[in-house]
Amino acid sequence: MGGVSFSGTGPPAAHASPSSSQRLAGTSTDADRVTGKSFSYDDDAASAEYWTPERIQKADAASGDSHTGDANLVQSSGLTHYEPVYWIGRLYFTRGGREGSCTGSVVKSDSRLVVATAAHCLYFDGDFATNVRFIPAWDGANKPLLTWGADFYQVTTSWHASMDAQHDTAFIKMKPRENWGGSKTYLADVAGASRVDFALAAPRLHYEMFGYSQVSGYTPAPLVTCSGEGDRFIGSPRRIGLMPCQFPPGSSGGPVYHASTRGPNGTQVGNTSSVQTLGNTVISWFVPWGSEEHAVYKNVDTFVG
Image 1 (cartoon, one colour):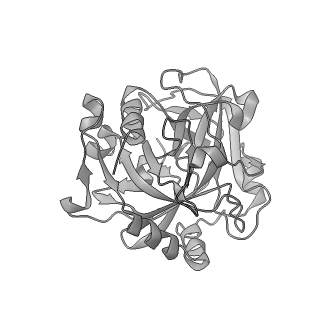
Image 2 (tube, one colour):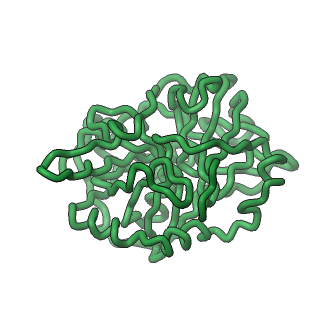
Image 3 (tube, helix red, strand yellow):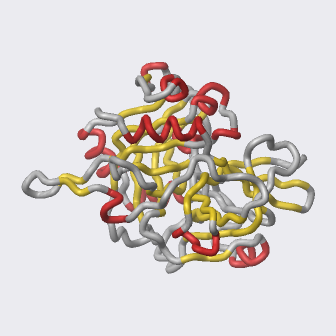
């Protein structure tokens, strides 16, 4: 079996003290055991100030991937470029003292504030991400919907306990934006949000994955996408893979839609996780959402700080 690499551009693992996390009662047995992190409005203001253009540029280059910007990679790996989608964006964070980035997507929720991504972007080997910032429809230069700070995030129980790649999923509740006069703006109201289904994903269905490549400088079509029939292949009891799909660093956490003929207007059923090489074949894996992911989604959606 070939090597496996996560496709975010996060920093290497570092250890954090137990005080960096917060256990919250959830809405189900699974959610009760999941650990996450909450943020104050002061944290929100600090993260907005932290992410200067220079730091965003640094995060984009964190993995040092030699294929970044290589058109031949896209042509040879089953990927195509896609123009910005309002509800898909870049997720920036710090972990282990370094900047990192992944992909996230706004999903329909009662709070109108929930973003889905990969768990390894936010928690790795005991270290929780801070300075979490979401930029919907980011094209490397423009922020048409501004930036959004995190209120609370959680990873799945299985990922927190053993970094189980079969459940490499996290959900984030963003803070609403405070308007002049005291009113609030909610993320899904301005960006839109995809429908979700936590029982639909299965092998032999047709899917389309989306994720960001490392964007720095204006890129008219910053998203990459790959579509095809998903399967479990060898060595994956739960995750579903598409081949040949070689998603680049920065794409982790991107949405996976069923009814791929509808592109990003389909129903989101999972998130991208990692890329694996098996001989001469490259597989991009995604986590099919199920009951454990649903418990985290509900717990995050109903969180009150």
